Image (cartoon, rainbow, N blue to C red; front, top):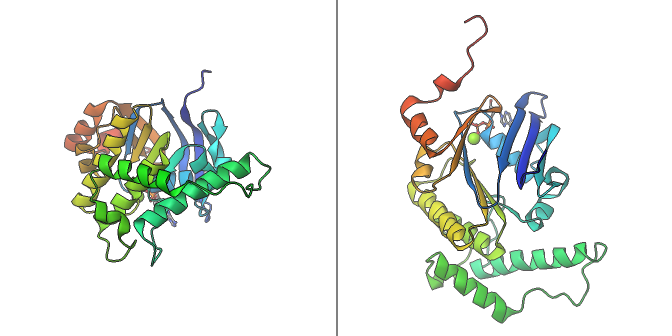
Length: 269
Ligand code: ADP
Ligand code: MG
């Protein structure tokens, strides 16, 4: 079997209660492709997102998630990040008294040190100090220019009166700084207003234009998100399995027809 760049193979996930939610989910993504997973409430979308993040409440009982041949389910969340997989909304931004710039610098340096440690038997050499400030500033300026973020944003305190849209902007900036190979976006928090959705989507599309090799997986129950993120592939998740895959037209079809036509008939019908 030829190996795909990113591949979810026969993934089974259950809750701590033992109830199985994902029942053999398969999905492949090639480098540079933009995919969306949609589905009705309760189908397992957030479960998939939390599983990819390594949330301890979701127990993998079978299957693999291979990224360039490596099963990322065996990695800690920060190792997944280092492997090149960025899970947006993975980092709850709740650090009072820290500016956006400092937060980004900490995230970047943490990765540099972790990378050095991985090459040195788990210990970060004392010579590794993280990114020099001038280089960091340059990278931050570039990222802010690409994402059209106002200069003053970097000096603001995280979470200090941030709107939902501003929190998302900080996350997308983080993504721009870390330059992931695969960006996984999930809408597990339903509190996103349209402004925040637009910021996230436009940011992702801009980063994808800049780096066309970046893969994107959007997990959403918001049809309207796809007004901004244009997936090349759309998948429908129902009852823990992908039941239909198609092109952008499938999202439009779901909009007019809903999901019922894709459900398996109940036993006896
Ligand atoms: P979706 O995001 O597609 O709406 P979820 O993955 O959130 O679906 O949920 C799938 C099913 O699993 C639902 O029936 C939901 O109630 C249940 N579920 C998910 N997470 C939990 C949890 N942490 N505790 C209890 N039930 C959960
Ligand atoms: Mg959900």
